[in-house]
Length: 173
Image (cartoon, rainbow, N blue to C red; front, side, top):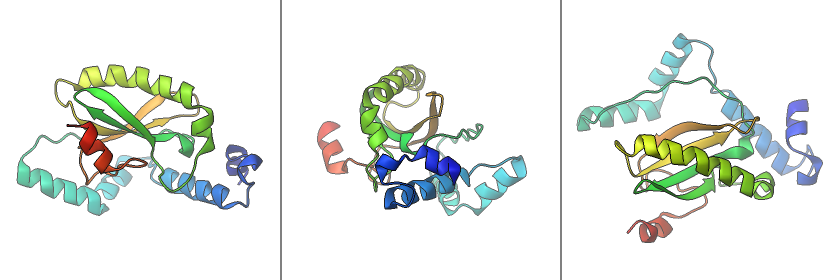
């Protein structure tokens, strides 16, 4: 609990506040997904209904499939973001968690936005030959490094976080 208390300061309601409890749950549910060996990873892939659905859809469509595995990186859960890329341009960034107000994002908006934009310019340049429209989940770790968590297609089956797909339908025309 010390790590949680240090990460969620008293001015957010203290360690017993709903906010602190929500963030502690969010942190625990994120870190429980980390694994330490390939057998655990294979087991998670086989047991995941989401992965099974994605694989079934892939097999039906015969689309190219890429599975990218990277090390698990601890990050402040408040710094999990979702970016929206349209025609190879980062058009919007949202906090990933859509059920809580995250004051650290507001307080550090300029620094976070700058780091994400710099990273995404390079990433989009690499991706643009293969994919020009996508949703990207991003985290900033405790050192301020930007990491890609996953890529998803643009569309209503992908969550819009703090935006609405109605907004994007206007934006993406």
